[in-house]
Length: 354
Image 1 (cartoon, one colour):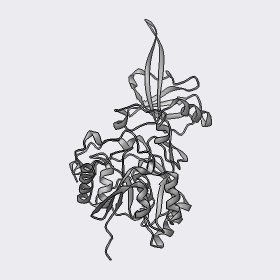
Image 2 (spheres, one colour):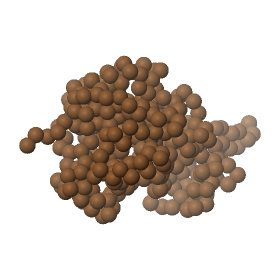
Image 3 (cartoon, one colour):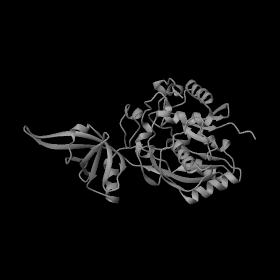
């Protein structure tokens, strides 16, 4: 298939830069097979039923964006330069992170960047356009200093419109966030608040928690015309034995397994590659495109995605390319809000016959 098959024109005005408040008041488009319905996220109590199981990604987004200063002695005297850093992934050796460094040429091997009175890092090396930074702190001390100095790593299409602020540290985090390590949020999950979770639990909807640390690669553009040539980024995830048992029990009882977000879907389908769900841990680079066989997910709650993205390919695999084109045309005509802070959709594929 061609990349152009997943393209569409989106008015700039539909890109959300702040989330709905309260979270569950965001609009919800429900695509039940070929039928499209409108409502709000709190209407999930209408669309879900007793015995359904929502799969929730409990990754916690770290405030991975840092602004610092590099000092250097020159022939003209002391000079300094501003350096912007976005942390990507911790390395095997404690205290070292891979990072996007801008401008990379302003920082030499062995030079320090000062981020705050307590947090600084030394450039250890460069590879594949990334810097490798050794921080002066590790463990809880590092976490505390990062929380004080860092900002949330908002997606490029929001960051281009405004800077991250203190409100984003709440808005860009799920209410159940637990395991730190993501540099992007599982954004469909941002629509849930305590009253909605309580209402769903009261009606007999079950929850299972899995972890997939969303990486910056989620925003990488697809640069090949033939999507079969695209190399997917990898992300670390875990489906515990408890979660796998719960999901298998729901499937056996005839309930629906519904991941909240493409991250949770990609993870459970990785764990279900053998035909049924099993405990799993490791790096996944699963690339879901039309023709993919879904072994675990029965539906998907997700936001509206970037044109020409791997996530458009994923939802097209679930619902069918023509149906997704109809969904997105409807969403644009009805002025749904798009991307990370935008509105949500509940995608329920047609029932399989036989």
